[in-house]
Image 1: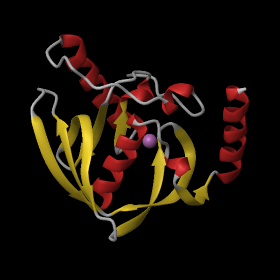
Image 2: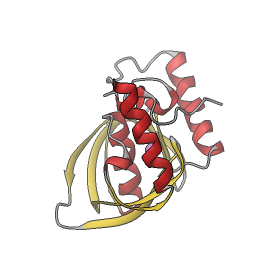
Image 3: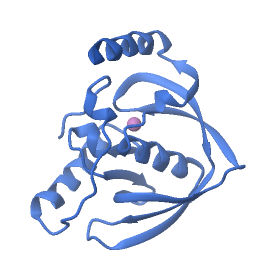
Image 4: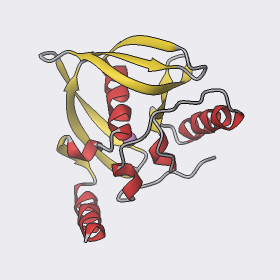
Length: 167
Ligand code: CO
């Protein structure tokens, strides 16, 4: 299993790089290790920078199992239809909060074989995918929480730590 990086580690703020080589074995085994890690940690998704790799891969826990979403791009999002969900993150243990996001999105990405795919997602799946794509851009759910439901005191301390880290 891979170690999960927790906030305020700086790699979580890094914009990750596109994957170019889909053929090497190391890449394929990294994807299965990420999937295993996400399942063992009961996550709905996991981004590569959460396991210390600054590349544009995230694993999404679909109904029929984990799938890699590589070099994703959001092509369209519903501007007026939005949903509010309580989100958590494996990089922020015991912290939860409400986030408002577009309810429907259309993305383009590559699967682990390097094939281009399109996907329309709504509801929880759309929220999970947006949370993970944010990770790949160095954006964290704490940037978007409008109300904490758990761990508000803890996050205040962690944010202070992050600021001290920047000095
Ligand atoms: Co997360």
